[in-house]
Length: 133
Ligand SMILES: Nc1ncnc2c1ncn2[C@@H]1O[C@H](COP(=O)(O)OP(=O)(O)O)[C@@H](O)[C@H]1O
Ligand SMILES: [Mg+2]
Image 1 (cartoon, rainbow, N blue to C red):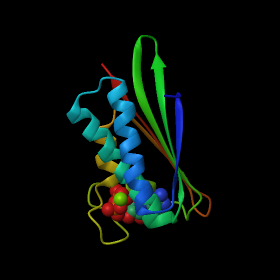
Image 2 (image 1 turned 90 degrees about the horizontal axis):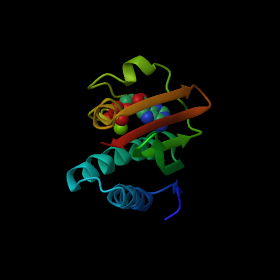
Image 3 (image 1 turned 45 degrees about the horizontal axis):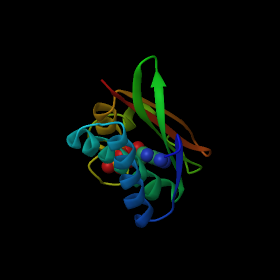
């Protein structure tokens, strides 16, 4: 397995692929089955957001290392409309699409590190990492 994997995001099928690849990497790092599910859930949420709000984008999955710690890092990038109110977007229950509004704040809770950069008219990048303790 290479250290970085790119998954194009254009359709529901890509969402399934992204989840599977996330589980594979997590399993290779000996994350528990329930941790693999948490990672796959966070991957689903950010991939779903790309499909819903940007139409298409890209997911990058990578093995990361910090000292003796290993982890899995996920970057979800799109060139969609961006998020005007990032603070609100990170609140539980905030949704511009009448959805649950738990995708971003939920993913932040599931992962150890979470960052989001977004520019209106340019796009959105979410980066998150889960460390194997
Ligand atoms: N990639 C994205 N591009 C543009 N807007 C986004 C993106 N991801 C999230 N958003 C905005 O942030 C809001 C909150 O996202 P999220 O927490 O996943 O909740 P939900 O998708 O259920 O609305 C969305 O309703 C949307 O307005
Ligand atoms: Mg969402």
